Length: 158
Image (cartoon, rainbow, N blue to C red):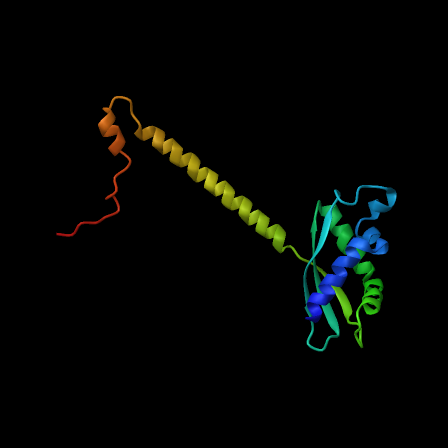
């Protein structure tokens, strides 16, 4: 419950707080388009049992330099985020904020790309094999049955 509220507040701060936006995207202060250069999201928040420490998992979509700058900017503003979070939420003690880079989305997209490549290779090999089986010298009736044997996986025992 507390973790979800902290995640909501931090996400709202990333959208509305200029200090945090300039920490994540320093080029935004120079007039660059802050929506296109990189995207920073709060993917998960873990709160310790004693509510003393909050681990904030941050996903940054962009190039490697943009990721490094965004994570470094968030870590440098951890005290500021803690004070703002204390003002926004009614907690007796505001926990220490630790920003951790979350690469799970990036790993997931790499796995999906690998699976797509394997699927494309299999389809290419399948179409190549299909072309080999289709020979123009066979009659039309025999050509239909050549690759479509429904009993090829059945083992008959006498």
